[in-house]
Image (tube, rainbow, N blue to C red; front, side, top):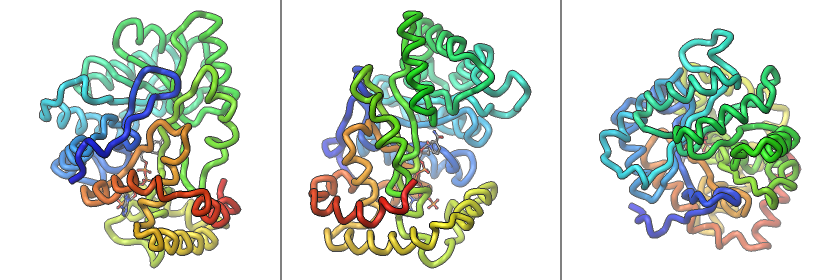
Length: 333
Ligand code: NDP
């Protein structure tokens, strides 16, 4: 077991909030792929290792992921000031009527109330707009977020998979109207998907200071090498409801090159005396603009394995990074 001494904490952009460099999210697993006792074990394993951020969303298992997490948090007795919990609004939970999805004032506020109930907490530490909503003016969403913050129901707000232009517009709107601005973006970031974090958002990091909590750091498990010889029966790609992900990968024209790259990356990992998942996660951690790498895991052993990435970051010397770049960059989005 890793002690909390080995965990690192990073500022979320230029805000004062400190998040563990590795955090834990509930997508696919809670309320769906794993039973509630396993979910409890996973959350406790993460907390015991110093993870202080648990990521969730209204849409995960149609709200059930938040209910499962809320019950575990309540049962744990963990002091509220030792963890951060998030929700995300946009896709809706159980229903998808015209005002049950999107980023209108009505849905942003009602979805927040529903998430607070499911998670059994008085406030969300982070509340993300899960996608941009072309049907709602940014002023409307920003003011709804600002109001939730002034009411004490949300502490910080952010975006997920917004373009740099959309985030910039949110910053400018909040500055003009004197509203609390978004402090964090939640983008996908891994060895095979990196342009947005590295290039598109580059101008947003310095001022006013965007933080990032990045998702799918192992490309849904691909970067563990577990799919090298087909799809294991207990894996995410074999989970009911995840057929779209399996099809997307199967139809990806760069898939064969990715599989070849995975073998080359695994060889570098073993040269360094570590594993491929640790190497791939350490590579994400190496980026100073990443506030937190959100881990997914369906088994406590995976989490324990992945926490070891913290010790690999220093082994990624300029020379090793160069070799990793040569393998991964040409096939990355
Ligand atoms: P990963 O890319 O790390 O994939 C996690 C999956 O990989 C696990 O569930 C497990 O799958 C497999 N895995 C992890 N570690 C190991 C290991 N050591 N050995 C073997 N297999 C391993 O992350 P996620 O895609 O889960 O994303 C992390 C979190 O980010 C989510 O839970 C969610 O909170 C957030 N997210 C946010 C999104 C957004 O739009 N904002 C979108 C997607 C995720 P298996 O069950 O097959 O073993």
